[in-house]
Image (cartoon, rainbow, N blue to C red; front, side, top):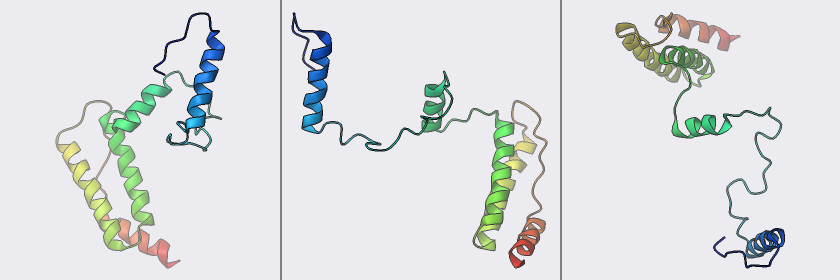
Length: 133
């Protein structure tokens, strides 16, 4: 809105006219998410929603490094179990093992890590057993 409200014109009618003109020009049709329901419409109100959204967009984690690594290890185990090939599962587990090994050598700040490297061969045997049945 670049135009200033003229004196003597009701503010509400001025804003309504600006919105109507923008709608007629199609200015609202190219917006991201146009025609889709709001994702968080049914979620309970969160005062810090904008901070969480910004952190998510920027790739920051709200968890301390030790807890984030525990979560990553848990996710890697689930991803390895659902992987299409054994090679893919092995790569996932090996990658998270490297991170665990580094964290064990130099513990991150925060709560204790309480995490051990995965026995890749044992995980792959368990995966084979699940996929065989």
